[in-house]
Length: 82
Image (cartoon, rainbow, N blue to C red; front, side, top):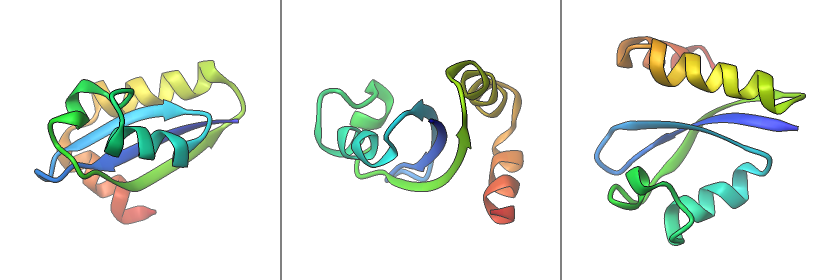
């Protein structure tokens, strides 16, 4: 399984990514150099949203849709619906 997830950073910004293990990835974002460069400067981060996909391709497409095509307002609306 692959997961598309959204994190809220300490500065209030949102970060979207994909992972096979959300908890491990969240720990990396918060306490490891393996976390994304974006989140390393904005710790701590917290998980605010996730979706499950059966394959990497579908997850990557959804990540792109959220990350690049949605405005902040649309992302916040997505969070409210969940």
